[in-house]
Image (cartoon, rainbow, N blue to C red; front, side):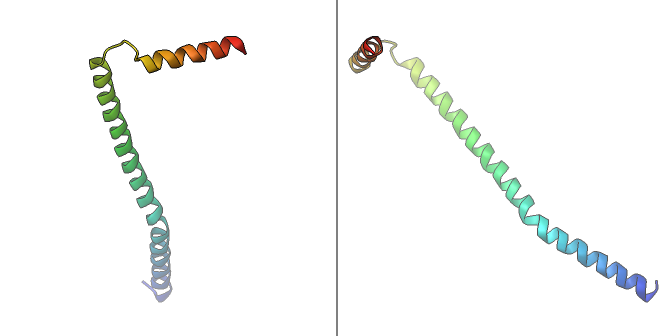
Length: 80
């Protein structure tokens, strides 16, 4: 290899290294965001499963407060 070829190889290697250093933080950030999104999705699914189990064990009769609030809402809709 001649001196010019070696200089060209060093220049291309340096350019590639700079490119990798510039792109690496973005790639790591994207991977971290995907991991966090998976954790959030998993937690939401677990919460939904827990709520489904809780709601199936509760009675389906509404409480007095719920019944009263529903009655007031329907009166407001009729009067307006």
